[in-house]
Length: 555
Image (tube, rainbow, N blue to C red; front, side, top):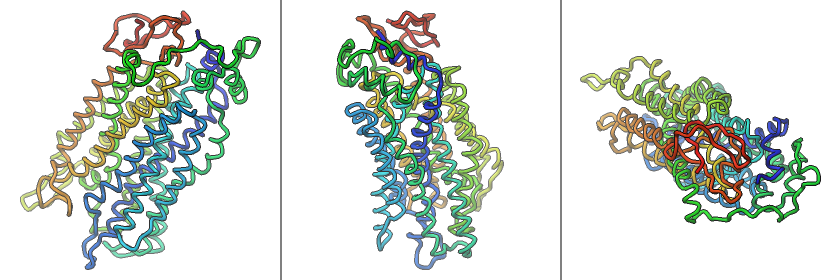
């Protein structure tokens, strides 16, 4: 039987504190995105500053292994942080560890900008050290923010609330581009230098850009500490239903039987089946669901992170960004940041907010399915005619055609990433699993995604190198070329499309009905499309008919 306070939360009207929670949790994701996606703006600059040869005639580049480490080390930290803080959030409570992740981000962002050393190796090593711990803090933000927003939300608008938190990632990517454009423009005005040289003052640019990530995190640190524990954790995990009512009444106006004489004393609620993560019962109830959330997120992040982190290389390959020898180091930062800003403004950010607007109307499953479908379509639309966009004559000179068309197709890929699996893979794991395992399972799902991101970050940089020795970058082994790399990403996106059928629809169903915590001796569970897609409806344990979107069923 559902606890009155949880029923009240499910039925609560949208209130001001819901939006406050979105801002508090969302600013963490704003910071996460800024920190993760500001590094591509400065990797070219780092190569010029620390790896240019003494003659100075050819712009320096980061060695292949160094470039992979600088870009990928934060993702490694993120993976570890997602697993650790997901587990800790279920063990100690969401509130107790929520501020720790933000504090880690503040300290590590500042440390990244202050990376010291007398040699290039020392500077890069220090930078990688701080970026690992920056990623560790970012990783903790994923399961905690998603779980907290999920547990605060009402059933009717839960998807939009969680999606709005994640949509702040788009603004973080946009803000990183804006900061890059602004800082590089200022330095280019006051410290001009002839192409292809770098002014000594350019060393401050990457430090300022990376350090700025500490600002939004610091601004919301106090407010995270003031958030009460979620009622679902307090009631279902800690077993203190009375305290759950008190906590919710301090921030939300909820009309509940629990406000009267029916308040349950701590420990008096019905004991739920305490199966563990590594039990047969968990596998029976949630095994396919966890497989679905992890596999979909894994496929999504291979495609999304490889393109987001290496989009500067894609734009350079198709001629939208000039060759390094034709511009100064500061101009290169400016042009890379400008392209990221334009794509974020017209494709990335709109994709997130279209999801917010529609997710509680058409559901998670359809959005994720069409997202993977169109990601596949637009990757193929870039890969198949790639030799039209970029071609070489007999002398080896490169020719670029239809650059605007290429960029439009590329932007549409990002739009459907975000109006698609990049949003839904974050939302669904925060809804499917029991409260005592919710953050852990979300962390596992997110970590699978970051494993994909690591493959994308480390693999795409090598794979996209030309198979012709005369065209690859100095210090990089020959790869399969950008065209065949895009074919590979289309294949991964197609795989994500089919993995989506492992994930059930969660729209307009209470968290306790989804996880089975409302069971009263029955064996109700939520199934994937593969389990049952023919039954007309789902009946909750409260006897309320729930919407069937083609892939939920009772057992």
